[in-house]
Image 1: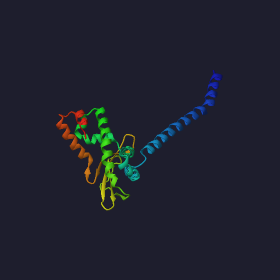
Image 2: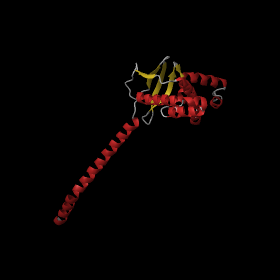
Image 3: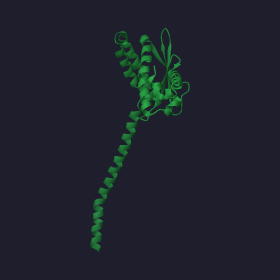
Image 4: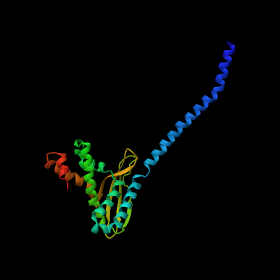
Length: 220
């Protein structure tokens, strides 16, 4: 009996460091996963709302300037270039929900996506046509007069193109589930496009007996 006990103690003594090493390696593995997750989340969050808007609008202005000749000679190529830039920082599904407002709850996911595609074309044409007159005027970002204490709250980024005629823009940015900032509404020269398009959507809903498919069929 004593010999058996001595053998068990020897066995436990021999493999105790192994168990400790396994515990240590397991702890290191868990910590490493946590660090990778945190690092990945930080990278995903990346740019702030202002930085996202700044990058988006500067890229858009550069494209408008470089592609201006296409507006007269190959308008579809011009709008395609503008649309590609808008897609990088605009969430058109969120824009669709903003425009539909109280009607959004009645729309199916398919209808919402269809409207998002329609609005992508609408906004590309409207914004693209507005930028044809851009000639490299200075873009100035304005301070937010009402910053929120909540880092995930919607953020309004205001800017102004300064030249012979100053043009004010306001981007309403929100943070997605992927922790990236996207635009969901904008105001151009004092015109809130979300409200403007909501008025059009609401009028069409009244005209077509609240038939969302009919509204989308008749959107212009």
